Image (cartoon, rainbow, N blue to C red; front, side):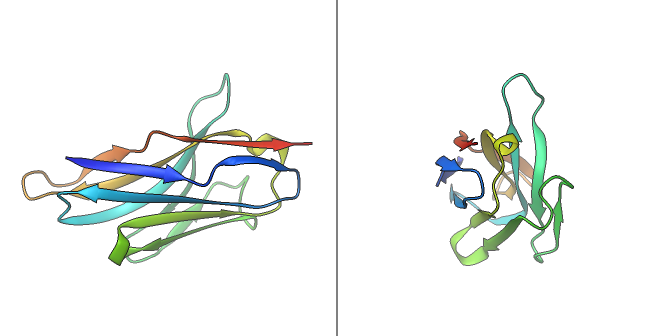
Length: 120
């Protein structure tokens, strides 16, 4: 079984910064892509950023230049540094990982979500 645990959410004023962390644990053989999604109230879940096993990155247009995704393969962890936060960044943020175990290849796992609230 694989688990993803997020941390680092909270309440911040507009213009501030937060750093989200997500660590994967369990019977992991390898992890391919890792990423962050978010879901605001009344809206669909959307991709925020994704990083490949080789550290290639892709960002939603709305966060380019403000957010940075990174990973630590030795720790099976992914991070999201969020700067210049705006009220419209308020959402529940979920991490995801494409994990291969000894029995199953390439299964997508999700964290439980962490709330980010940006006040104006």
